[in-house]
Image 1: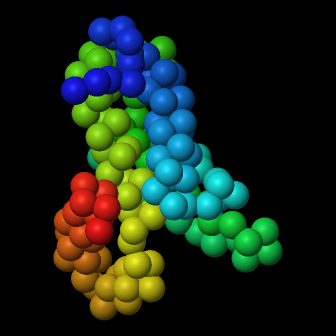
Image 2 (image 1 turned 180 degrees about the vertical axis):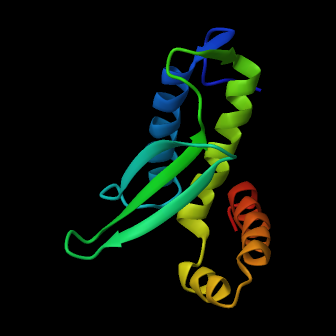
Length: 130
C-alpha cells in the first residue's frame, strides 16, 4: 500500500493540506463538479461531512470535519494514512449519497440507520464502480 506522505512523522498542517487536496481531486475524479468548493475543519470526533447548496452561485460547498490535530503536532505516517482513509470515505458520500433520501431519513429520526446503509452503498460504488 502506498502512502500520500513521505516521512514517518506527519504534521497536523501537512495532514490537513493533504486532506483538502485529496477531497478536491478525488471528488472530481469520481464525477463531482470542478466548480464545487471544499474546506477542511477540525472536529472533536471522527471524520464527518456537511454539504450545502449555493443556488445563487450554482455550486455545492462541502466541509470535511477531521480529528482535531494541532498544526505543529506530529503523528505517525500510519495514523495519517488511517485518517486519510476516512477522508476518502467521506468524499464517497459527497459523490454518491442521495441527499433527498438522506434528508427524509433525518426527518424521520433515522439518520444513524441511513448513514450506515449509505456507508456500505458508497464504499461498494467506490470499489466496484457500479
